[in-house]
Length: 387
Image 1 (cartoon, rainbow, N blue to C red):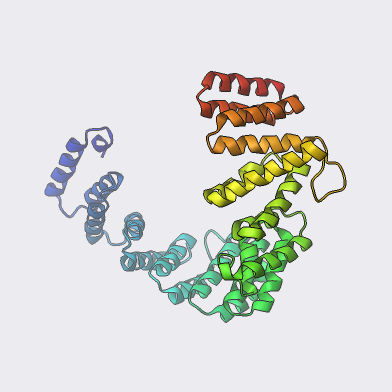
Image 2: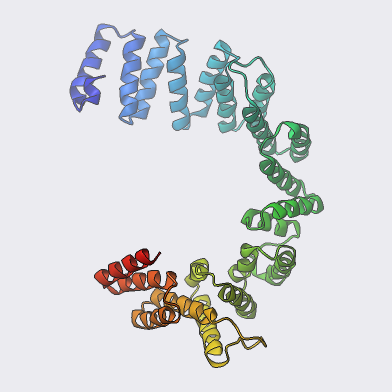
């Protein structure tokens, strides 16, 4: 084994084979051979070696654990179950053994047997004893198994039972909402997802789940108007949610997209949010949406230059709005490879606010894309010194 790990593998394998010829019944020799094969990623051969070792020493815990892991790795789940059953029988109070057995049944598709194993051992005299975090996670795992077994009503009842011992309250609430939805109790599920949104209105899963409770598919064109209406209602409830402000751009087209984009753009420009372009860059995969966003910000910049206000506003906007318009447009044109136009716009942004660091960073990026690596380095270094 030493030689096999000292880049002298051929000598190592030769010595192991010689040892097996001397004593082919040696469990230690087969075990060592299996360890070396496993380290060399010869998993099939390693399993054969472990099986030979078990013929000579069928109750060796170390070999049983190692071969059980390999069985799982090679998707031989029924054999993994057999190994885990032997280990559990040898020490039924050791949590790793019966948890391994439950997991093996889970992977083998026998969720009912996995549930029985956990039920039989979770309250036993475990050594070492389970702490409150382990009990919490184990309870949620058991609930997941009940869910996988297809009995959603039982899963809901079990979820209610285990509530006092759960540490991860958010995880418990997420399970409750998902199970209610699967049990087709949409009204109760909508209330559960509403509760989750009050905790975190930026979570896509919560928003998608709430839509499903209303019978809506966010990716379905036919549901587009209804989806936008529900998102509008949620925006009124959670006005600070950036995700709810952005989602209409993802799932709308045409006039609906234009309205949503204008609302988001004006909010971000007024707030001076430098990450606006980064946030909407994913939309540029759709050429029409990318072009529409560029046209929209160009229009905003023109309105501010000409009247100092947006066309739908009666109040003058802060001077910084034009800065962020140019900042966005510089990145827009850089994305499309028009580096000259991008540099002109970012220089205008720098002149309007020489102490703002972000435009220098974007200028460095544009110079890099244009091939001026030295200029990019110097510009970024200047920004670093200013900050």
